[in-house]
Length: 357
Image (cartoon, helix red, strand yellow):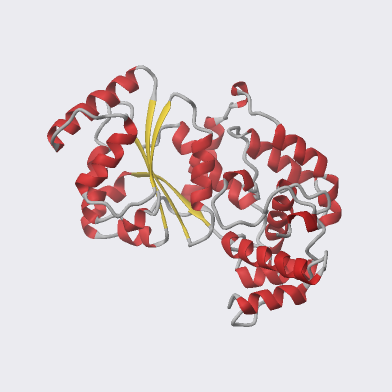
């Protein structure tokens, strides 16, 4: 519809979790780095929680695309399964076929995992929407974590879900599973208007925009207030705003258009909100990751640090470099992560909040 009007190669604000459009803001970098760290160091059970629409599935798919070819991964996206259905689903994706009952399955799976570990290969099960898992399936997941040797886990499991997953893990009958959680990650909405502006500008650049000066400062400020910093809400507002602007023949989207769209989507702020451009209301940016899968994380962060103020005048200066980065392939020898230093940072952060809970 509006691609040609705004000079785009692709639709920049779809509601699908397309990892091509991932944006490396400071807060998002922290989550991606934690996931990467947990998988790379074989932490065992990792739990990622976050509100609806904050980008959990996008992060998972980004990680999946960057797993080494030696990693065998099973991705479960529909968790409403019985125990038998769960095992059938997982074993099919792991290539385990010759079994007729649970006892035989566990015996075969144990041998497969042990052999893969002996050869230096890794096996990962990633379960999305894990807050929908039954208590019985969660207990089976806990038992699967017993596939281990004296010094290493033979199976890694990532549970991703809404905040209800944290409540579920706090149930008394699941306390054993809770104690197995080695790493927790929390996906938060974007904390300030700067990151929302960066998100909008980056997605326009990825979509092929030569001049991403489409949304005015006031428009971005109001998008932040209406969306509450949630990426899916931002996408919905921006996509509809660009459609309205196209219909009206307007190449610049101002606050008035956002108000109309937000009202139509029933997303207008219900309570008075402190202006998002008030610097006293901004949370300091999170630290930049010093890692690698990560060539994307590193190059994305360096670009942010070198930019001038986040609006389009600065974005225009980064168009060419962004396009070059998008065409660039990641080489294996670039994957060098300073795990010792990162582990110290994680331990420090965990100690500050009083440990995992």
